[in-house]
Amino acid sequence: PELLDLLGDAYSRQHEYGEAEKAYKTAVDAEPDEASHRKGLARTLLSEEKLESALEQYQRLSRLEPESSENFLRMSQIYRRQGKFDLAEKNLLLAKQHEPDSLEVLYNEALLYQMEARYDDAERVLTGAISNVKARSATDSNANALSILYEMLGGVYREQGNFAAALNSFEDLGKLGPTEHKRSQMLIVDTYRQNRDIDHALSEAKSAMADYPDDQSLKATYALLLADAGNTGQGAKLLESLLAGN
Image (cartoon, rainbow, N blue to C red; front, side, top):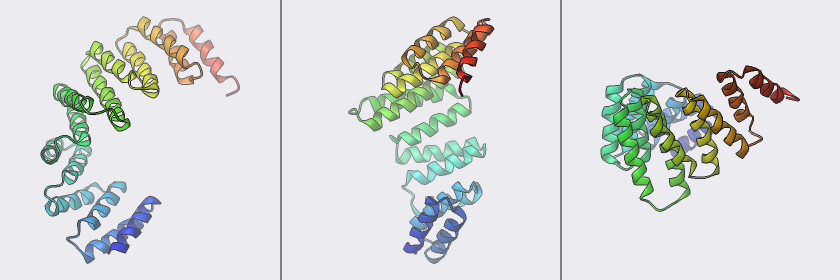
């Protein structure tokens, strides 16, 4: 069975999920209570979008490994994709009981609340997660986590119509590094545009273009903003310049 696990893993890496499923199923049949076989099978079934079959495996795994948060988390993700939000939350809270500080669990909890338009709950989870990460020593992984959390929190504020708070979150995102700075500028421009504050959107887009003069997506965004402001000819001219030799 261990060789079958290796074979299943090899097939999965090559995206030959049908063959991987066969290998893992053979291993599961040989040793039904060995969790590693079922984990491989469950992951493969998810990759094949066989949600019900994957759910069945994770349910079995949750009984084999009652202290593992991962199995409850995966069940929650499947239920969320199926639109069964009550069951998704139930399993997510079980995952959180076993691993309360897991960023993956907290991210999925906030995502679920956001999908349910429970914005206050999403905000609570995200702000708590950000505080926990900021309290740790600075590492690349913590910076990556903060970038995800700040962007998601800004999105939650924006969906609420709280544009000022959204802008603050995106500005915090921009302080994390060069890549995050560029991303934050795009998000800030888009936030002003959603708030129909075209003057500020144009100003921010122009500033971003000065920082990243070769970025065509920024130039295209600026051209569209010009059109929104009534300067259709100027926006069209800018877009035509992007087409030259392209």
